[in-house]
Length: 116
Image (cartoon, rainbow, N blue to C red):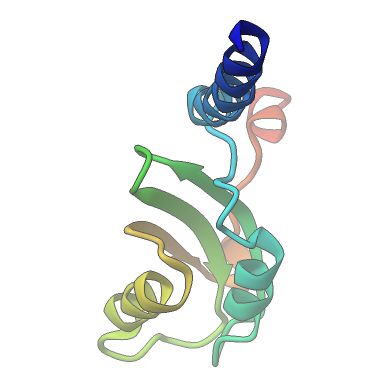
């Protein structure tokens, strides 16, 4: 009986340790499909391309996202709020930070900045 109880505890602890490690390392939560979000963002009206997509857990129930969207045209009123609302509804993203860039003024990576 002691071995059976030990096995149950070990299996439960494994799941808890795995979830804790993912949270500690800012990994994409298991219930989030990063590829689906990436495709959805890329297909938004007016979006030419996307980069610097990062998704991580803020807690066991809250998820954050940051992304840079390259958009050649001006965005309409409410684009950012509507995009954040849809991310929350469709993908359970609780906190979205979206940066809009023009094709001719895209951000540079840290290595590009430091090599200048």
